[in-house]
Length: 272
Image (tube, rainbow, N blue to C red; front, top):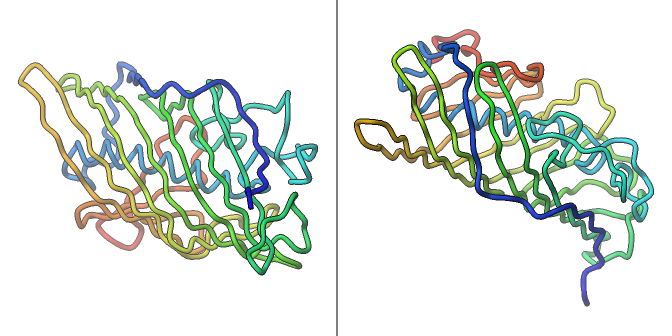
């Protein structure tokens, strides 16, 4: 059987990316992540995590208030308001985006449309591209996700997300010591991330992890250096998530306002 799908498409994503940083130095947290390259990579991971969490707080991970597209609350057709990377106003960047969903009942059979009582799982594939800024840096980036969400049938209180994704980012960062320029790419895996249903307060995931693997190539007048690192992001139900990079741990403030640095020293510890 050919899966039933609901699809929304804008123009194709451009995967050639550029990122420029403002002139002011931003050293917040560098005393916690002693390696400046790891810290720069952690900021990208933190931004993506906030994007995820804010998306999951929307119906089916898409923009709020659009119900006309084949019965899924929050999935819109033409004229859909565009969201932004970084989690502001849902998925769907100002440049372009695609999303496709397939619905299944409790027996695993494909459904023609979403049904609030009988749909038990949704498989959705999405892409987001566009601009994001946090403190003294700004980026043009692309992220793609392939995920399943379960726990939907009947009266629900939480949903569980599993899946994977990838991203491409080119980054430059200005400091007092000079410019640091990067090309970054990465992949990530979601494992049993349990999230309250949209409209819940608080809205933050109660458990689960995101594992991110990222490679960054730094270029400069003295040559280039490539680093590959694994990061673990862990949720526990409050407004922060822990991010561990090479044994060093900080917190991601999931309430961070648009444009601000989301990394914080870990409470109750040294952060290193």
